[in-house]
Structure formats: C-alpha cells, structure tokens
Length: 379
Ligand code: GLA
Image (cartoon, rainbow, N blue to C red):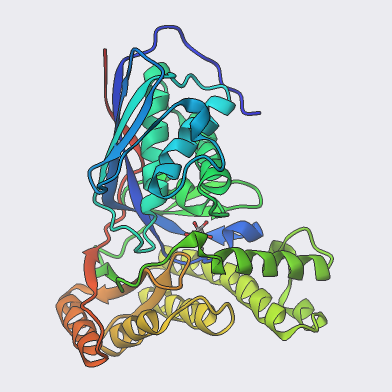
C-alpha cells in the first residue's frame, strides 16, 4: 500500500497536462530491471476534472466520439475497456491506494500525442488524469508524490487496461526535465537527468511516425515479456539485468538466447549513449542508436518493414543514427540528424514510403521537453 496522507478541503476543479515520450535507447529493458533513456515530448494530453454533486463518473475525450458514464466501482478491472480504461483505471487505482477520489467527477481529456504511434499517448493520458485528480486534494506534487503516481499509472495500465507494460512511459511523463534525457535504472529505482548538448552541436532529433498502429494489448508485447521471464528462470536469475554475455550460451533455446542477447547488449548501449553524450561524441551516439535498431529487429524481433524502411532510409540520407522507439510492431522511429540534413532526410523517407506503396509517414520534431504539471486548480 502506498502512503497517501490526505488534506482537508477538496478543490472543485483542476487541469493538468502530461507529455508523450520517445525513448532514445534502452528498449524492452524496463521490465527486465534494466536501463532506459527517454525524453519527454512537447506533444501532450490535457485532463480537466470537475467535481460533481452526485456519484456519477463521466469520461469524455476531444479525440473520441464515444463517452462513458458510470460509478467508481465500475472503473475497475474487467468493467471498462478501450481508451476509457486508461482514465477509469487511474481513478480506480487512486481510490484503492487511499487517495481522495470524489465519487462524482467529470473528466474531459484532449491531446496532441498521436494515438497508437508508440509515443506513449496512453501514459500521457493516465498521468494527466492522475495529476489533475491528485491536485484536487493535494497542493504538493514533489518528486516523492510523482514517483507514487508513476506506480498508480503503471498499475492502471496493467490491471485495468490490460497492457502489462514496464513503467518507462509513466516515469518519463512524470519525471523528465527539459533539454535532458532521463537515465532510468529499474533495478535500483534511480532517475538521473542527462543533459543533451546536441542542439548546440547543430543536430536535431526527429520522429518518423510509420502510421502503422501498434497496440500493446495485442499480445506480442506480453509474449516478449514472458520469454524474458522464462529465460531469467532458465539462467537461475531474478531478472535479465543480471545476465551476462558469457552466460547466454547456457540457454539451449535459440529464441530465448537471442532475446537475452538483446537485453544484455541494450543495457550496455544505454551506458554507451550516456557516455557518448557526456563527451559530445555524436557519431558514437548515432552508431549506438542504429545498433539498437538492428538488435531489436534481429534478436528481439519487434520491428516491422515500415520501421526498418524509415531507419535504413534516414541513415542512408545523412542521419547519424536511427532506430525504432517504444514497444515496436509499428509506431515510430527516431533519427539524429545534422539540422541542415533534416529536410533531405524527411523527403527521402517520404519518397521511400511512396515507392514501397505505403501511405505517407508523419514527421514530428522532438525537443526534450518538460514533465507533467498542474495547469490550474480552482473552486
Ligand atoms: C512500451 C511499454 C514500456 C516499454 C517499451 C519498450 O512503451 O509501455 O514499458 O517496455 O514498450 O521499451
């Protein structure tokens, strides 16, 4: 049970915002007690919560035609599905954890994080709702409270929305800092800001949205997670964080061996990128991005032809490196590009997609942005 002290005098209305994220490197490592390096995006989700005088919960979104109405009990596991479950799930877990959730609440959300693009629109939705509801009864949102809300949102996604994700996205949304990546260590729980000097060096990070929708509830993600757990058991380890390259050959199953190979090498790449960032070795950062993509494509097998095409084309057109970001099976790729090559890279990716008979990809800028915050509290 999380500690949840309460204050008297609930406010009537609150608005909060929470960002989407891209993960620079450290993919499919969070649920293996490993290392990740996300940044928050400028694209975000806003949640407005208004206390009602009755015991109705109403949930609506500017991006959805359907809305939902029910009560707090109806927000729990198995009672809600689709996009509503991410919002309802947060209300339910907050209540379970002893936070003050008013029994009557209007929740309205609106966002600019592209949906299903692997940029954590779900976590930004959960976190915006959690921060807004939290603000109704608690004026303070310090780093301890933020960490507790990470766990609330992760539980909501796993237990109510049914996506067994690892905590990377919620942590990025709640703890990121502008102009920094955030080094996350899921073994000791530490979060360390890592300054990004690449704009001053004439480089930009861009996102290519393949527009192939990925859904973490679809089963592939859970399957990878189970394979990692099975491999850890076979190696007699609590998690793959403690696996070592030399020990991998002890696995007789070649699929499991490749999965472990990815996790072990990906943790090392996170350390490598952090070091390269601190030295301003941009070429090395790019190489490690591309090596991460190769490992996700060949060893972890979570890429898809559209992601591979975006990555290969970006690198051929002048990116220092590129890789898929997020869970995979669709979603987005990122590329680190000299500013004067950004347009050329985008045109090359568009042309490659057209030639392959694919619809046009989306393009986003990805400056490292701020974490979730309360925008307004009143009443
Ligand atoms: C999704 C999940 C995260 C993480 C990534 C892969 O974004 O939500 O927890 O596992 O995939 O790194």
